[in-house]
Structure formats: C-alpha cells, structure tokens
Length: 173
Image (cartoon, one colour):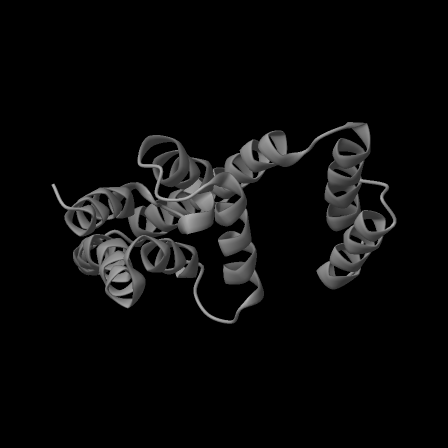
C-alpha cells in the first residue's frame, strides 16, 4: 500500500472517532503517526502541534502538517481531505436527524451529551499529553498550577503561556 493511500485510509478512520476535534484524540494521533506508522518523530509531532495551535484556523492543521511531512503538498491535501470528509458527512446526517426529532427534550439531551463527551475527551487528551511531555517535578507543578489558575481566576491564558515560556527560558523547567 502506498504511503498516500495509507495516510488517506488511516486518517479517514481516525476522523470517525475524533469526536471533540483533533485535540481530543491527540495521544491517539501521536501513536498513529509516530509509533505505528513512523511518519515523523516525536519532536516533529510536537513542533507541528505547536505550529497548529499558534496559527489561526482549525485544529486539524496538525494533520495537514503531518501529511505535508509525509508527501509534500499532495500529502497535505490528502491528509486534510481524509480527516474532514468522513466526520463532515456523518455530522451532516446526524444533525438532520436531530433537527427532525419531534421531542425537543431528546434533542437537548443529545446535544448536552455530545458537549459533555467532547469536553471529557479534550480533558483526557490534555492529561495524556501532560503525562507524556512533563519531565520532572517542576513541569508537573507548572501543569497543576496552570490548571488551578485557569479554573479559579480570570487570568487570560496568554499570561500563563508567557509564564511557562519565561520558566523555560530561565531553565526552571
């Protein structure tokens, strides 16, 4: 099987379970692209994720960058289409079904359940990524303090990013 076909098929299958967006299943994407397929190494994956988060636009840019790494512009197009088409079709028909329901309570229940599922998957993904990248007590402390500050204050996240960058520059983490 060619690399492009493998990229298309695996990312298409991944798209069907990427409920909550790419970030919700980031550890699975990491496992697929770094461990299983060895399309790139872990540092390149982290770099692409950082670029995708810093750039405006959808979170699926991580997948586009993986495709670009695998096979240039064609790989980027294939990866982007593969991650977008299955879930787009599924959501189209699911939304039509939900809107066609006669019972508004069932509609709300499905929408709230989907929201809770997406939030849970994103939190689980964040936890898995933190376990994989934190090296040392200072990094774990920074992670925990970031969570506490984000939950209990109204600080803008950019302040927390700047604090993490400063600690990294000064060699604390």
